[in-house]
Image (cartoon, rainbow, N blue to C red; front, side, top):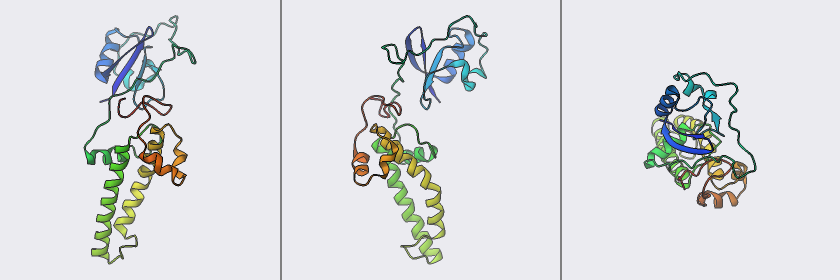
Length: 204
């Protein structure tokens, strides 16, 4: 379940479950125009703009005379994305997480997320190659039907997790195309704290 943060009167609170946030909007303890954020959002938004929150909420109509809190860009009062808790999965869980984020080129991916994906990708490629060799007589150096289908299915998440790995270092995803330097950055630890691509996936 999504973990939400909310900001009211200049202060930030959270994380809380989505059901708890909806209940607070329902009861009126939080106004419908309160600024909210969860991982995956690019910036804070009023709760009234989030369909998943307001479709269950019976919160009172927003007072049109009430000024919606605004972010003061470039000042000490600028809202910052809160650091989320650390992402942590089993070894195979990291592989599944990359597949779930099939074409997600935004956000960050820590070293473990990247290398666990490629470890299991190599294992599955090896297994499909053996299947093709045994059942179809395909030479090991060629693509048989199973290996080809698997490769086509995973090529997009493979590129996406590589781009997010570059983002984790505070660099553009285009660096993945730069020989030698891309290898260096793939092994580089996460940039501490939040950066322009999102919160630190380690929660630091």
